[in-house]
Amino acid sequence: MHGGGLVLGRNVGDDPRFDRWCSQMDCVGVSVEYGLAPESKYPGPLEDCYAGLKWVHENAEQLGIDPQRIGIGGASAGAGLAAGLALLARDRGELAVAFQVLIYPMLDDRQATVSSQWNDPVWPPNANRYGWDSYLGGLTGDQVPAYAAPARAKDLRGLPPAYLSVGALDGFSDEDIEYANRLRHAGVPVQLHVYAGAPHGFDTLAPATALAQRANRDVVEWLSLQFAQCG
Image (cartoon, rainbow, N blue to C red; front, top):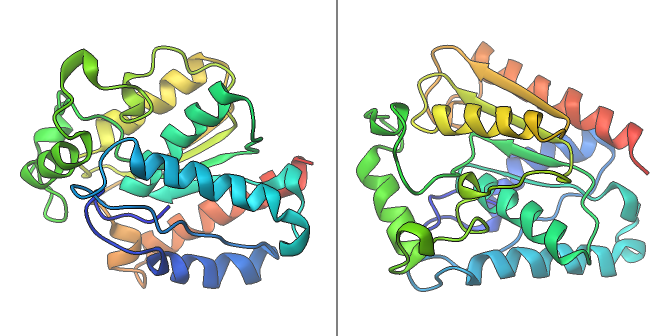
């Protein structure tokens, strides 16, 4: 699922990642063109993502992929949708998910952490508030379900293995680190990477930097291991 704060972007935004990953790991990449807020509010975009996952399962043979090795993921808002999709797929029990890749995920609408108030130059607090308000469409407080804001989930048991990465200067860093810890406490295999000195979107905005290249190597290494282990 592509990024864009739930209000921007297209599925072709994932092409640069897939250009690398598909050749490096001999895998197939599929990106969902989910509806954008505020025109498409929760649960519309998440149901689009669920429909995308279902389509991949139903067309696994035609796509030439192993249905036991289907993972989900994304960056920023797309990673938040992926985390919500993992919860939804677990609870519906219809579609298997082998793993989840959450790259600086947008997880918590409450903006209650210290880092959520930092003036990240890429995605500052006011932009984050607009994205959440557009997506939630008037839902507030206890009305907000965990499928929409995964940080609100009370039970993380039974979720697929997870990879989380975030920059140490990212406004999402506190909520992402906390979510990784909660996954670990729930017995979910999780690998967390926090990159010193990195703001939101550092790996795509400055892909030639040593830090971005290291982050890309780290996720490919983990993904390669998942493909080798599952199935």
